[in-house]
Length: 354
Length: 271
Image (cartoon, rainbow over all chains, first blue to last red; front, side, top):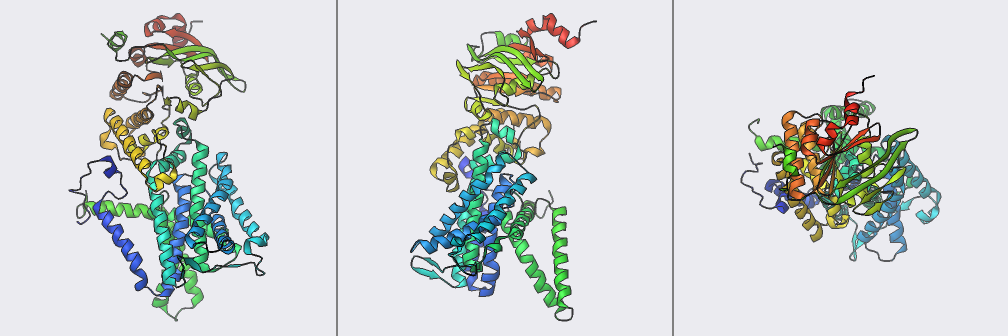
C-alpha cells in the first residue's frame, strides 16, 4: 500500500537510470543509513565488535567476490588470499610509513591486493569455469605460504603473528568498538555505493557481457583481456580492503593461516546464498552465513537451557543450518536478493495478486 | 512491382556506390578440412549483399573471416582500400563491422535495454573510476547512449519489452534485440547470419522490413546469409553462391536464379 510507484514520473533518461528510481527506495535507504549510524547508541560493545563489524567487513569481501563471480562470471576461490594481502599490506604500510592516515593505508592495501589479483587473474584468459577455480586456489595457497615463510611481512615477529596497530586518523585514535564500527561502516557504505555505480553502468555491462557470451562480447569490441583483468583487480581491491578491516577492526592479532581456504569457501557460500550478481545479496548472504549460527545458538539456549547436553545442541545447530542452506538453494536458487526483489514486486500490488 | 525492383530504382536515399569491402582469393582450412577455397567477391557501399548456399557450404565461415573470428591462411581482405591483415574481432568492431549470430548470442542475464546499451561500448570511454564516482563524462555518455539506444528501440518496435530480461523473450523478439544490439554500434557494415532462421512468415516480413529500413535510413551496407530463397531474391541487390567452400555464382538475384551451376547445386545433377 505504501510501496507504489504511481504518480512518480521520470522525464529524462538520467532520471530513469538513477540509482534508486523509486522514492520509497530512496527514503528506505536513507532511514537504513541513519539507523546504521545510530546503532552504536543502542547496541552494546559485544554486538558491535563480535557481530556488526565482522558482518560489515565480510559483506565487503563478499561484494568483491560477487563482482568477480556474479558479475564477471569468473569462478574464483582465492578471496581469502587477497584478504591476507590487504591485511599484511596495511600492517606494513602503517609500520613503515610514519603518520600515514588509516584510510590511506587501507586504500593502498586494496591497491596492493588488486595488483596481486591481476597476476593471479592471468590464467582466466585461457581457462574458465571449475578449471579457473582450481587455478585460483594457487593464489590462496601461495599467498598464505609466502606470508608465513618470509618474516619481513610480519616484521620478524617471533610468534609469526602481526598485531594490528591502533586506527589513527586526523590525529584521533579510533579505539572503542563504537568508533571502529563507524570507520568500518563509512568505508563499506562508500565502497558499496561505488560498486553499485560500476555494476549499473558501462563497466558492469562489460563484465556481464563477458560472463554471458564472451564470443559475442569480443565481436562487439569488448577486450576480454581488459574486462577480465579489470574485474579481477577491482574484486581483489574490495577483498584487500576487507582483509585490512578484518585484521584492524575485528581480529587485532592475525596470523597468515587465519586467511585459509575455509574462509574462501565461506565467502563463496555467502555470495551464492545472497544472490549472484547483486550488491544487496552480498550483505544478505554475509548476514545469513555469519548470523544464522549465532541466532540458532541463542535460540537453543533459551529453549532448552541446561536440560539438554551442549554437545547435542551444537550438533543440532549445525544440522539445522545445513538443512536451511539446502532448502534455500532448492526453493530460491537465485538467492536472498531475489527473495527480497520478489517481496518488493508483491508489495507493489498488495493487497491484490495481479 | 516487387521490392527488388524498388531497390534497383533510383529512389534509394543511399544509392549503391563504390566497393567498400573486397575479398581476394580467400582460403581457410581447419587442419585438412578445406572450409573455403579461393573465394573472391566484393561488397559495394550501401548495398544488400546475400551469401547463399547449401548446408556446409562455408557461409558462416565466410562471415567469420570478414569480422576476424577466423584468420584465413591465404588471400586478403580490403576495407575501403586498406588491407586488413591478422585482424581480431575487436579490431573489426572498431572498423565499423557489426554482426548477429546464427544461434542467438544475446547476453542472457541482462535486460533488452542493457543488451543494446552494451552494443555501444566502443562509444563509451569513461574509465571505471569515472563510472564508479559518476563523474560528468560517465553520466553524459550514459545519457547520450541511452538516447541513441531508445531511437533503435523505437525503430525496432520493442518499447514494451525494454526492461525485460532477454531470456524471457520469444525467439523472434530475441532475434530482433540482437539486430538492435548490432545497430547500437552504428556500424558501416552489418553482417547478419541467418536473421530469419526459424521464424514464421509474419516475423520474417517484419525482419525484412527492418533490414531494408536499416539500409535505407542509415545507409548501412548489409551482408546477410539466408536460406529462404524468396527473401533473398526480394531484398538483396547481389548474391554470392557458395558450395563446398567454392564460389559457384555471383550476380543479381535474376542472374543467379537462372545460373545452371546454382540450379545444379541446389537441385542436384541427374546421374
